[in-house]
Image (cartoon, rainbow, N blue to C red):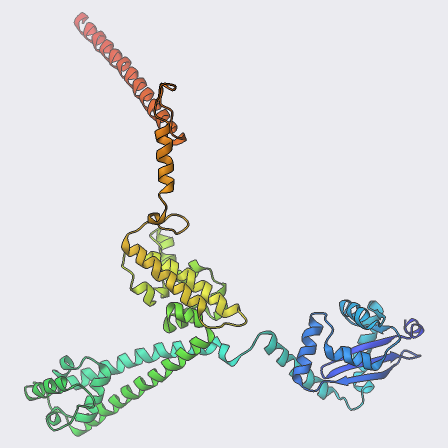
Length: 475
C-alpha cells in the first residue's frame, strides 16, 4: 500500500483545529511536513470550518495552497473539496480508500510530525473550535435564551401567590385592631404602607399620609379610626405586623423589577409573539411548550388549547364538548371579544400567534414585530366584523362588497327567458331553475303515487271489515 503511495509521489492535506498542514509520503511509509498554515484567530478558524463542512474552498486554504505551489497529487478527505481545488487551482486531487488510511496514520503521528504540538494543545484547540462552531451554527445569542423567560415567568407566578398570601395575612392580623381600614383601602400595597407609617389607629389623626394615599381616603381613614371597634395591640404585635408589611412591600417592588426584566427579554426573544398576545401570555406559552422552538413546531390547534390538556382529555373520555381555548384566553385580544365569539377569536389568534412564533424562532434577522402587528390588526378587523353581524364568503370578502354586475346579469338572463311569439313556452333562465322545476314535478308525482296507494289501502280495509261482519252473522 505505501509503495503505491510513494510511487505516486503523493501529498496529503490534513486539517488541524489551528490551521492546515501538507505532508509528503516518503519511502518506507513515513510522512514529512512540507507546508503549514496557522489561523490568526478563532473567527478565521470558524469561517474555515464552516466552508469545509459545506465542501467549499475557504479563502485561507486557497491562499495557502497557492503559496505552497504544489505540483504532485494531493490526497484530500472530501471528494467534493478535491474537485473544487482541482477546478480553481489546477492541482490534481485524489480521494479513495488509500487516502483514508494515509490520513488515519497522520492523525496517529500528528504530535510527532508537527514540531511544538502536544496532545494537550490538540485537545484544547479542538474543544475551543467545537464550542465556537456550535455557537455559530446554533446562532447562539445571549438575547435569545428562552430558558431565562421560562424561569422568570415561573418566579413571577410564585411571587404573585406569595404576595396574595402575605397581603391576606396582613389584613387578617391588622383587622383585629382596625377592621374598618380594609373597606377604605382595597390596594394591598397601600394597606401595607399605611400600617408602616401609621402604626396603631390612634396615630391616624397625627400622621401625614398624603404621600401614600389620596386626600379623600385620608379623611375617610381618620373618621373610621375614631369610631373603630377593633381591639388594642401591644408594641410587640405592631413590630411583627410592620415586619410582615415590609416583606409585602419589598416583594412587590421586586415583582415590578422582574416584570420589566421579563418584558425586555420577551421583546428580544419573541417580539412578534409579544405584540400578538402580550408578554405574560407569550411567556406562559413558551414555558408550557418547553422552549420557543417547541412552540414554533406546534400547530395552531395545539397553541389554541395549550394549558387546557386536562379539560381536553376529560372531554374526549366523556364524549363531551372539547375546550375552545387554553392559556391564550388571557390574551387581551381574546378577552375583549364577546362570549359568543371568544372561541372564533381564540382560533384566529392562535393561528396568527403560531405564525409569529415561527418567525421569531426560525428567522435569521427579525426586524421589528411586523408579523405580530399585522396579525393583531387582522384579528381586530375580524372581531369588528363579527360584532357587526356581517357575513363573509370563502375569500374573506364581505358580501356587501360584491358588485351588482352579477345580479344584473342574472336578471337579464331571466328576462330573456320569458315566452315570446317565436317561443311560446318559457325557457329556464339557468340550470338552477330547470332543476327546481324537475324537483317540483318529482314531488307532484310522488304525491300522486302516495294518493293511489292510500286509496288501495282504504279499499282493502273496507273489504276486510265486510268479511268479518259476514262471518259474525253466519255464526
